[in-house]
Amino acid sequence: VLFPEGGGQPSDSGKVGGVAVSRVDNVEGVAVHRLATAVDVGAEVEVALDWDRRWDHATQHTAQHLMSALAVDWLGAATLSWTLGPVASQVELGAPFSSDHANELEDRVNAAIRAGESIKAEWHASDDVKSGAVPGLRQSSCKLPDSVTGPVRVVRLGAIDVNPCCGTHVATTAHLQAFKILKVEARKASSLVHFVAGPRVARTLGACLARERAVCDALCAAPDQMADRVATALEKAKEAEGRAKKLQGELVGLLAESLAASSGKVVAAPPREAAKDMAEIGKALATAFEQKRPDAVLVQTFGGGAFLLSASTKELLDVAKEPLLAVMGGKGGGNAGRFQGKGADAGKVAEAV
Image 1 (cartoon, rainbow, N blue to C red):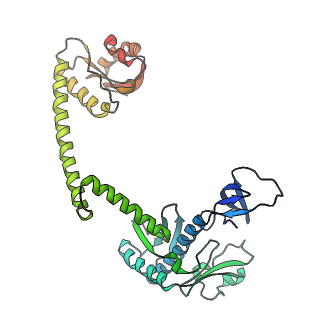
Image 2: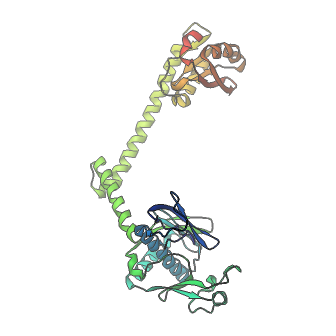
Image 3: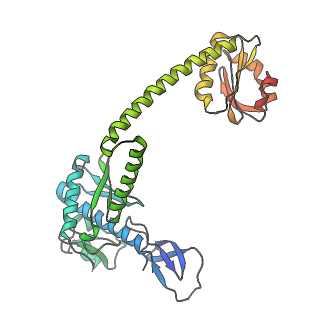
C-alpha cells in the first residue's frame, strides 16, 4: 500500500495500525515500514495512506518522465539523473540542452499535458525488456542489472514514452495540470533543470505573489515598479556604505591620534560592545595607532570578552602580553604584532594597563 523509496522518488507516508510511518525502505525487495512506535507482531492492522503526499509525488514523477522523453526526442538531451525534492524537483539533462531551450521544452510538456495522454503500468518478462522486445521501449531503457530476473514493471505514457519504473504515476497527463521550469543551472557538460508540476505550480505561484505583495508594500511600489525601486535602493545603500566607511576611517584616525597622546607605554582604547567590530574597526585602529606610537602597546576590548593586543613589533608586544593576559584571564593566539582572543576578566582592562 505504501510505496518504498526508490527510483529517485521518496517513500510514501501514512499510518499502520494508527501509528505514524516515518519512511518505507526497500530492503532486498521487502517494503520495510519504519514506525514511530512498535505494533504487536502478527496483529491485523489498517494501513492508511497520506494521499496528498502520494499525489504530489506522482505528479512530479510523471512530469519527469514526460519532460525527459520530450527532451531526448526533441534535442537528444538524455536524462543523467533526477531528484524529487520537497519543494521543486531537478532533472540533470546532458548536452545540448541549455537555458535557451527552457521555454520551448516547457511549451512541449504543457502541450502534452493538454493532450491528456493516458498512462498505464504493464508487466513484462525481464528477458523481453533486456532484449528490447517490449513495443515502444527505448533502447537506453533495456539495460537492467543481471540480478533482475522476475517480471519488470513498465510505465507507458501514451505514444510518448515507455520506460521501466517502480514509482507512482497519475492516470493521464491531464492530471499534471501544468508544468513550469523554475531555473536552469549550467554545468560542465550538462544542465540541472529545476521544475514544478501539478499542485506545486499553484503553490509556487501563490508563494511568489505573496512575496511580491510583501516587497511592493515595503517599497510602496506597484509590481511593475518593483525592479526599478530595488535597483535604486541598492544604489543608495551602496553610496551610504561608502560614506559610512569614509567616516569610519576618519573617526578611527582621530581616535588613534587621541590615544597616541597618552603618556603610558600600554594604552587602552574605549571598549566596544560588538565583538564583530574587531574585524574592521579594531584592526584599523591598531594599524593607525602603531603608526603614531611605535613605542607603545594598544589594548582593545569587545563584547563577549574578546580582546585585541597590538604593537608595532612582536618584541614590544611580548614584553606586555603576559602581564596583560594574567589580569584579564585571557587566552588566544596571533603573530607579528597582533594577539587576539577572549578573557574571562577582559573588563579589567584598566587594572591590566
